[in-house]
Amino acid sequence: LSLERGGPFPPHAGHQRGTEVDVSPVRSDGRELATAVGASTYSHAWTRRLIDLLRSEVSTDVVLFDDRAIPGVVPWPGHSDHLHLRIR
Image (cartoon, rainbow, N blue to C red):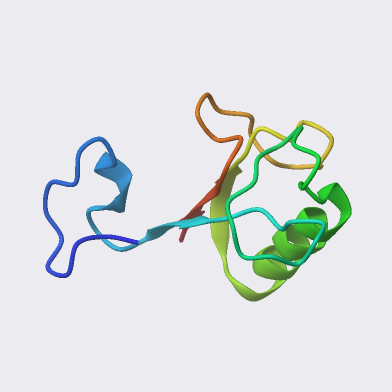
């Protein structure tokens, strides 16, 4: 999320105020290990549901994520293994 008292968090400049969060995409096998778009363990359907739920419960400015098949996400380099939410 951010450092406890904010401040520089290279290379994550946007996380300095605690208004941005990174979330792992959902795996198809239910395990808690990392996965990424295109991996056999990545669940597009469950990750899309997670994004829809987050958007319905949290006021977000943008969701950066490299799954171009999910409506409304902004593809961004380096974001195939996590979603980045900017919270209003």
